[in-house]
Amino acid sequence: MAARRLILSALVALAGPAVAQPRDTLTIGITQYPATWHPNIEPMAAKGYVEGFTLRPLTAYDADWRLTCLLCETLPTLENGLAQRETTPDGKPGLRLTYRLRAGAAWADGRPVTAEDLRFAWEAGRQAETGFGPAEFYRSAYELIVVDARTVILRLDKVTFDFASMGDFQPLPAHLERERWRADPRGYRTRTAYDTESTNPGLWNGPYRVAALTPGASVTLERNQHWNGDAPAFRRITIRTVENTAALEAQLLAGQVDMVAGELGLPLEQATALERRAANRFRFAYRPGLIFEHIDMRLDAPGLSDRRVRQALLHGADRAQIVARLFEGKQTVADTMVNPLDGVADPDVRRYPHDPARANALLEEAGFTRGPDGIRRNAAGERLAFDLMTTAGNRGREQVQQVLQGMWRQVGVEVRIRNETPRVFFGETVSHRRYTGLAMYAWISAPESVPRSTLHSEEIPTAARNWSGQNTGGYRNAEMDALIEALPQELDRDKRRALWRRLQAIYAEELPSLPLFFRSDAHIWPQWLDGVRPTGHQDASSHWVTEWRVR
Image 1 (tube, rainbow, N blue to C red):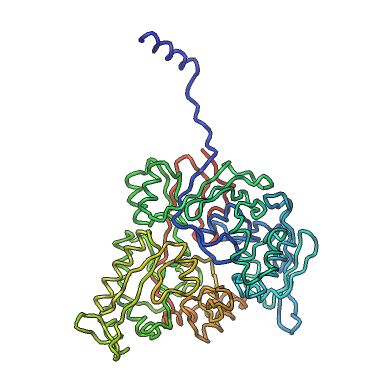
Image 2 (tube, helix red, strand yellow):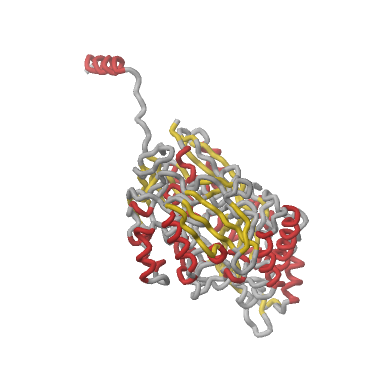
């Protein structure tokens, strides 16, 4: 036996040092699974993250918050002539924008991405019953002209400061989807090939295509063989949904996932605790960004329709303590939906410090007096009680719920915690306005993003509009609507700041939603992976997967 060991040792020595096997697969963990894969229906962070690998919008904001072309060749500007002022048919100032598609762009079935794919997306979006968002873009873009196979002209009925940004305008494969849509525009959202034939390669035009999926659990991506950009490093990427963040951490430590996407990963306090234990195994990056954790409210619900009640809820919530105790002080308490990192934030906007006495006074003014059990009631004896919903399994959000429940009980408000899986919560409850009280989640925006979809009265989801729009609370304010319409059309930045100040003042007074904090996302990837650049806004890091490399 000893001689045999010596022979084996000699053979190993002759073979030289062990060579690591090349890494050509990557497994990523996220906490949500999309309700639909269609890129123009129901915005959801999980879908946006996956489609960063598989689809290319015309434009996106990069990690430095600069607008850049992804599918187009050149951003239109007034200086380069690709943007031109003109007068609309009804006499208003308008814009004519020319976009040329990148040469060689192709769907994964080999068909080129053409101007017809943009025309189809525009046609479908122009019909409100289709339910595409953002609705205002499709209303404003009153004409699309196909110049040639790669060039379109968009005519807009207004001149805006961010006119070149087309991240929400994605081409759709007309050769697969147009006839489905024409047959039934209203029913199209439930019949789209993106959900009925998700692995059809002709649906995807990014570096990767969807090769397999297990609904609610995972999606497997493989290289798009017709991609003509920089080659991605991985042959296959598997994105696994683990809605419980404790289970996601366990899978990371067990090697079942290689990395956790910060866009939909571990709560910050969970990630920092993990870093203290496993800094030698993983790389950690914390990116503050335009991620607004807040609570939407059904503003037509009894109690919540009164501004004084909403103000009392915010005074009754010690958000500074929540940030300090649950998130180690690494989140920023929010005063409005505008992040202090954004250049248009008003540093003097009204604030709501933790003030239980003021909260009690406001509730008394609103006609809610304490009952024998400490919970307030109105004159009719109805309890001031609400359901508070969020995404089940997200430990950070569930802890915030529990803390808020206790704080609000101190001022006489009863909160019942009722959570749902993200797919149901976002795909049905929030988007269809089926929650009855409070819904906690995050909005993710781009730099200086005008909040039309969340605050304009025309963006309240309705059955008539096939539930497009994100103003799920039902907020209506004529001055807010006017500001939202005026803001994009003000090209002078200083004058635009004045409009932004007024918008934030109205928000802070009316509280159409309850601001909690701006998230810093925790990105965790293995020591052997380079090139991941968290963005801190709505265009996920996955858009730049071709920069990811194995060490």
